[in-house]
Length: 198
Length: 198
DNA sequence: AACTATACGGAGACGACCTCCGGTTCTACA
DNA sequence: TGTAGAACCGGAGGTCGTCTCCGTATAGTT
Image 1: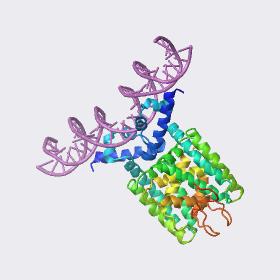
Image 2 (image 1 turned 60 degrees about the vertical axis):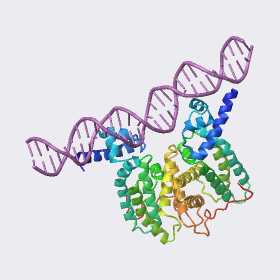
Image 3 (image 1 turned 30 degrees about the vertical axis):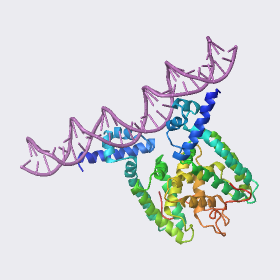
Image 4 (image 1 turned 180 degrees about the vertical axis):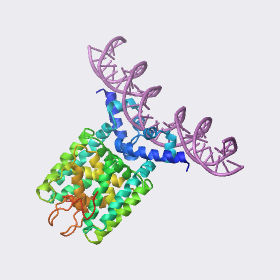
């Protein structure tokens, strides 16, 4: 990689991160290029599409989150460890308006680094909680991350209700746990309560 | 309203509904206008933006859903009634790719008819379930609808996993209920499990 | 039939995405 | 140090979708 190319690459990454924080991840790519002092052609050469750029920006960030997961792996209560970590993921996503939407939107082949790193980190935490019999065994880490991002997205679109995120996250966390008293309620789709057909 | 205007209005509504079903709600508005045999100007005069058009299309649909809510209000188990209804809402949203995203995206002033009708219908069901002491008392109907749409959205973006919707919906439903044995787990943010700081 | 308020339609401005290729710059090698 | 050429740059311009504007057409009225 030539020196000027490397310089431009780094500069773009830096400006992209700033722009994502300030204007959200839907900021026009041309703006990023301009602020980085390069043409759009250069941006698109280094990052074929918006997702490639986001992926590059966020792998750096994700490393902090995986580090947290590693600490939490030794925590006493595996369920608390898992849920704390999911909250941390949510908090991080909230820093970048639009990030949750992008992660949900992107097919699995997009933003691969971000996604796999998060899944590996969370997978361990989830497994521990499941082995302790505290979290439903049919849940996958991908599910929980999707739900977390969905909740962040919902909260993002409701800026006038600051507590929404808290309520929904509490709901989700309670829903992950196995029900202590008897069978789950949500699982076997009741389909008909009384005379309700469809 | 002049007769030709009424004709065009009706035609646009019809074609929009078809297009939303077939191509999703992000279909170009020009396509809808063309299929309706009118110019874009006419479309935009009747429906100032995409949300106005969607609102007009979906108020009709929402009436079916409110009808279901009225039936379910007399059901024996108020919690089953509520959850069955939410599933029905989800199923309906799934018919129109992009609808859930739009409902979440839209500020409360957009698609007002759809939103208020759904909230009124579901509000009654929620209140009954809460009065029976089966559903958390701090939840609002807007929360549950947002979460439902968020789950539909997540499932929509994961077309290769047909069961995702089922698992997440079950999770959400379990999470709505009050925990039988003691305090909730999700509510009082534990914040630190072991040595986990930021 | 003539008149006017109402409605139509599509050209075109705008903004964002992305591609392409002539021109420039770096670097390896003499 | 000079130079050949590979690597890279940049932005003009094509494409697509949204939305506006206004000259033209028409329904409804007298």
